[in-house]
Image (cartoon, rainbow, N blue to C red; front, side, top):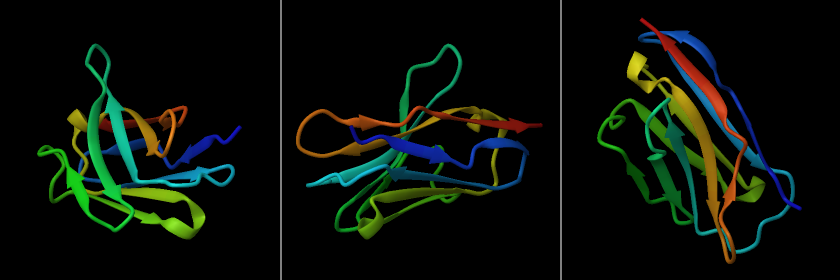
Length: 115
């Protein structure tokens, strides 16, 4: 069974940067969209950013201009570069992959931004 393996979370001060990575443990055929979601305590999971197989991107308004999503199709890997982090970015970040069949989800990686 293919799993999504996330890395790069951690604790950072406000204004700092982190880079999240998400790699599939095996081959996923027919990937259409790869993305990152986040869920803060007491809040619903929300889309942070997504990228299609052709490279079109979509960002939540709250992260536009600060976060950049990218992907390596050959490696089935998606990245999220997060700059100028704010305390309100604190959440568990989840990788998501859409392909034929059920969505794939990562286990989540904690991002904590201190003020």
